Length: 367
Image (tube, rainbow, N blue to C red; front, side, top):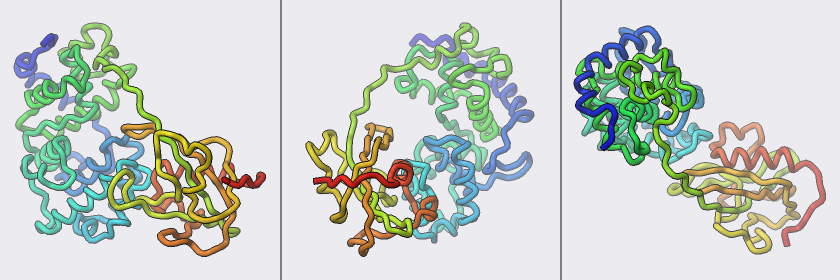
């Protein structure tokens, strides 16, 4: 391994690195809604909830969701007793909806245990939806255990600190070992959060502010003069493309037809516009077989695009007036109820597209 700062070197310098990092944190820590104030004991429920919400999501995007969750369900017992549909609806717009199901299942398990979160990292990992990172974060932040959570920010910091020549995905074991080598026995939670803040505010992917970083004296990437060159990037893989259509059947009062997705699978239990399956090929003619009702459908200009983890999606949107009864497994949604209805990001885009592009225009039957 061609490490410019070895794991042994990190262990040798750990006390100095930790001391400088905590000194920086004491003066520059971010004030976040879920963080305990200095001298205040962290609430394990709030730590866990914030860490789940923050997975694959930015602090800026999560903040209003976190506040809404705490207002609706101030304790883990409150969350455990909520209907799963309400929890999924509260997640609408954040994506990665399996988190909502796991969040609810975990809350129910903690409530069954009397509402107390375990402090042991291995026991935490056995809870629904709690992986290695989340378990380490809860153990360190909520209970000050000597644990070493590694999120994207921390991985980038450590890759730069050691000036790793392999991409992060190929260096996960090395990075995890480095994080453990640095984790202090005291103030482990403060140290972990300090690294998160350094990654978010100083050791950014672009334009890192090395001059203000407490890790600079030991950072091999900064010493190289090209910190942005690290972490090394892996070869980008093209995402497969899928296509489909959705149908916006609207009444004179503005309400439109929707349905709920199955309880398992992609975007599970979220609300959607009725539509076709998402396939790798177009329909070879018309999407008519996917329409929920017989109507004079017209295709709206443009398309809705969404990139998922494993594929890119393009949806055509069709609109038609309809004043009949909602078919089985469908229901009416008022336009002003869209924010709270439980639509996923891609379906929010589709509804907005239909509302923006669907006014007037000639009717074009699908077949």
